[in-house]
Length: 422
Image (cartoon, rainbow, N blue to C red; front, side, top):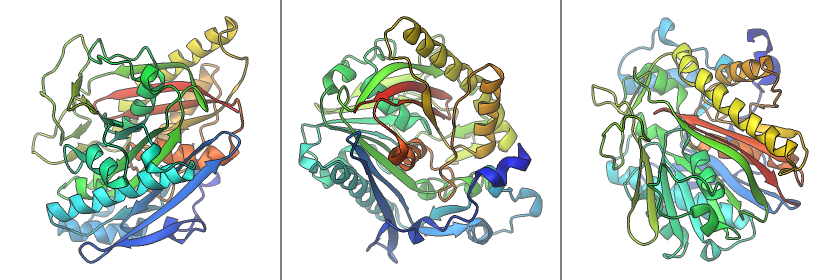
């Protein structure tokens, strides 16, 4: 695995803000916050969206000095991660701001990406009928409502906040497409049936620079950064659900412990789902996942890269295997067209996790193309799957079958296969 890393990851990629087709603005809050975004649209599929980041871009060398300033202490050589081998060249961070300034920045950012994603699809925000946003540590409990309102999305449009850590955006997409996803009867509405034929925005918006700002965890400070990715789809028209699975394995040891900055009873539901579904007003639904929280009250506490491998790979391979087998059964039964999965869009926790999952699946006879697509962003949690989807979107073709694999702290997994319409 080690000797193929530099062949697979584009280590020469320019910082995201310096790349062509990236629109750059400055948010006039604090000393000014740079924001870069790129719109993508595939006219053959009628699917588009927008992705990007905000804050200054730090390469792996300058990131070390940035973290030392935050910690007020040197980062020892033994504590410095080989980030290039983990697939990351840059991270986007913002300076210290007041809580209100952080909220103002992230509401501005979220609204920007919702508008940009709608426009990429040829829609006005006023036409959008649903917004599903994954956020690990939202800047406010009503964050999805705030950004939708600021973007100009109608008040009556459905808003769904999904708090399943890095799995949030895929969890949202799964909820919008799979009519059998009900979280043990907690979901009183069948969202997939409601949203069929409607204009839907699904994404992840992650202000992780703010989230980890108070952390002393040196691994988290090196891995995470700001990022957002939002796609626009019309379920049943340009994207069709084939098969999927939502799975939970509670992180007993707190290998990736995350503070819950969102409503949850913090009660463990033995033998049942640790997801809690609540209806907050006529148009807002919250899906909130229980986390093993850091005991010291910090935002996040994580084991090293090998701890992440143990946390995500075994169950992650199992979930993808089950989804793949169910997909093959549907093909054998004639329920789905006989096709090969063209690409797997996988959460970018780090490159080694993804390559190990790919290897274990291959050993079981499941060969999937799992491209690495986020070297300029770092781990951007729930934003990563949507950024990866949009970066691959220009190469996707009508009637392609695509596997989308999300996983995150908690531990939560969502894997689904979709068909892209022509």
